[in-house]
Structure formats: structure tokens, C-alpha cells
Image (cartoon, rainbow, N blue to C red; front, top):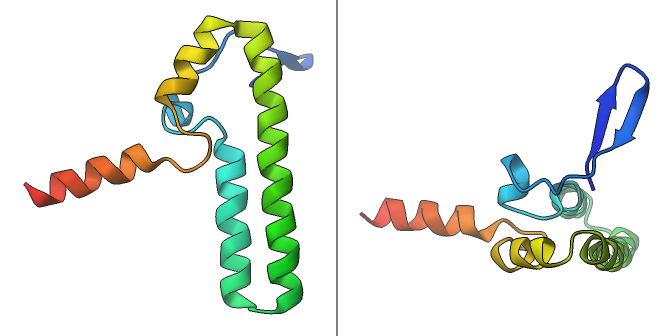
Length: 104
């Protein structure tokens, strides 16, 4: 859910945002957090970090699913259409396009 900044502070925007980064992933902040967590584990490969990283990833997943329920109720079929076209976390469509362009 996108928040809009104005002079009076942050306000809820009643439009479903499907452009920009949201065209490639429904949860760009969660995708970034996932990359950060995996990078953290690669730099410091401790068991504690691995366990806490896995737990955090589960937390992100279930939070995203709860948010999706709210968005489905708020935007209905418009959100379902967006959901079918856009991946939850990993923007694999970008990667797929780049691989296909390199093959040509």
C-alpha cells in the first residue's frame, strides 16, 4: 500500500499503484530486505544468522500475504488482475527478459 507525502504528512492514497518498481514486484521493500538478509548471511555465515534469516523471511512472507488480503478486499478484481501479472517478491520477469535479449 503506497503512502503519499504532502505538506501535512503522509496520507493514504486510494489508488492501486502498478507502475514503476511495482510493475515488476508487488513487494519491492520486502524483496530488498530479502536481498539484504541473504547478503548479510553471505558475509557472516553463522548459524544464528541463518536461523534468524529464515525466520525473518517467513515473517515477510506471511506479512505480505496478510497485506494481499487487505488489498484484495479494497481493490477487488483490479488487484486480482495485477496479482496475476506481477510476482510477489522476486522480479523474475526482468531477469527473464535480460536473458532472452542476451541470447539474440
